[in-house]
Length: 71
Image (cartoon, rainbow, N blue to C red; front, side, top):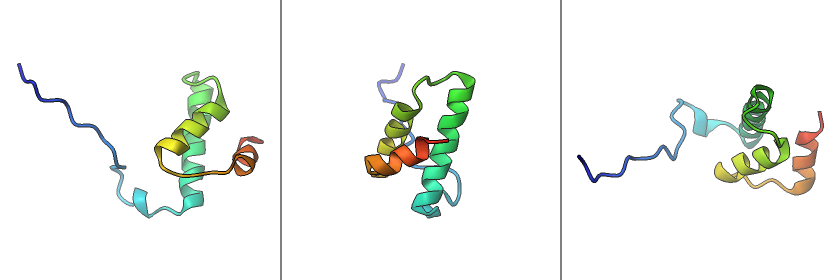
């Protein structure tokens, strides 16, 4: 048995993922959140979007975030 802690994935693994513009990154995250909401994996779209953007290190002012949440 190993005492080694498994490594985590802290960066995107898909080629070109770090080359996306800020708006492309946000649209991609929003698409993921919408799909997770549709599948029932998340229940609060706003909270999930805020968390994913924070995890991705993409600062978004509240006014801009609200525009993304309006369908």
